[in-house]
View 1 (tube, helix red, strand yellow):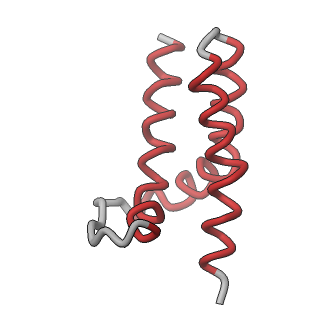
View 2 (cartoon, one colour; view 1 turned 135 degrees about the horizontal axis):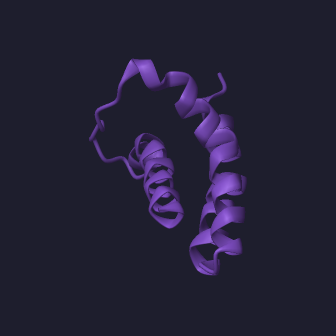
Length: 85
């Protein structure tokens, strides 16, 4: 159950990056989103991936754990920097 929850949260974290990744690659697709999840989305992007990466590495899935950590340490500041006026 813990592993399934981790993988679902991992997929959700990757989903949150889709808008910015599509914009970076100049692909005109807008994934659907719910306004009610705005604060959870922000927390997930800023801290969730780091926590997910740590938990995945502890459970033995080192590659995905490092990928989640890398996504949040590299892509989050990059996309925040691009969004600044």
